[in-house]
Image 1: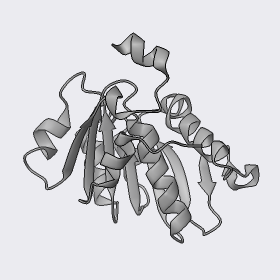
Image 2 (image 1 turned 60 degrees about the vertical axis):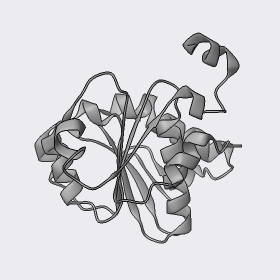
Image 3 (image 1 turned 45 degrees about the vertical axis):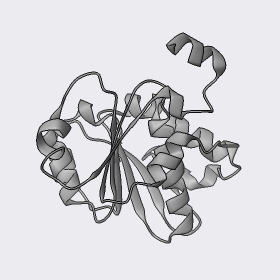
Length: 184
């Protein structure tokens, strides 16, 4: 069963449209955001939720793998609801979680969505994020590892009203002890 960690609890407390989540390795950023988005998709009808990264290999090794793991672990997964070719899952209530790759500005000029999650936002340009933001009706989640400064610090931090939280591995009580010891 998925464990509700301090990281998940901190993210559930965020209320503003843009939710910025900075955190290091094993802080449960992506996993906790996915838990929240899966719950939204199951609790609401006909939502479109896009989970975006700079490439499909990045998505497949991270967000898609975690999404499938959560869904299977919770007993929610149904093979018939997953479109392997187009990378989306349709929930019983009609909500869809789509995994999209946007590495060029032109790809950001696509359809609208209700909720957006930009995974590892530091790997895309602000121009791409801006176009995705314009086409998002409700919540926008961004996460990143604090390795270098990027457009969040120049375009969002002091300019746009948003929630911000920093997570660490200490916020992830589900972390295996050997991993915790390696980090420490």
